[in-house]
Length: 277
Image (cartoon, rainbow, N blue to C red; front, side, top):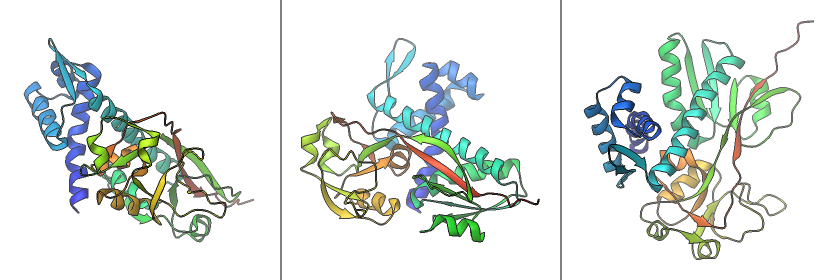
C-alpha cells in the first residue's frame, strides 16, 4: 500500500514537471495547465523533495533539465504514452461495461490512474484488474479475462494482438544499494553486484531482454516482475526493469557505460470475435 500511495502522490506532480520541462518556464507551463505559477512551483518543489534531487538548473528566467530531470522526463513520457495508449486500445478492442484486464503485476499500479480516468468519462464502466495468467491464450478463450497486457509475442490465430507501446528497460537499484552511490558504472563494474532475474529457459537464457553477450552475476531468480521489483527494493539486488516500473516504485536507473538495452514492446491481446457466418 505504501508503494501505491507513493505512485498516486508522484503521479499528481508529474504533469506539472513535464509541462515545466517542455516549456522551460514556470509562467508558460502554468498557462498550459491552467494553474498559477506559485502552484506549479510548489508541485515541483514537492516532487524534488520526495525524490531527494534537483531536476532543473536555473538559467536566467528559464528552468533547464539536468541529467536527473532528463532521465525522469523520458520515463514520464513513456509512462503517459503507455497509459493513454493502453486505455484507447482496450476501449477499441472491447466495448463492454465490464472489462477484465490482466497485466503483469508490476504494471498494475501504473494502470490504476488510467482506469480512474476511463471511469471518469465512462461511469458505467466496471474494470476488473487481474494478475496475468500463466497461460494467456486459454484464459482469453475461456473468457476468464477480456484483455491481457504482456511483454512477449504470442503466436496464436485465435487472438488479436496489438502493440501498445515501446518500453525502455534500465538497470534498476534501490536508493540504499551501493550502485546508487556511483554516478556511472562500466559493464565490468556490474559483475560485483548480484541481479534478480527470471528463471532460465531450457536454452539457459533469462527472459528479461538482457544482452546475451554481456555477463552478469545472477543472485536470485524470480517468478514475476513484481517479485523482481521487491528484490531490488530490498537493496540487495539489481534488475533489468521497464523504466516506468522502476520510477513508479521509487527505484533508481543505473547509468552503465557500454551497455545498450533495446526498447521492448508491451502488447495487448484479446480473443478474436467468433464469425457469425
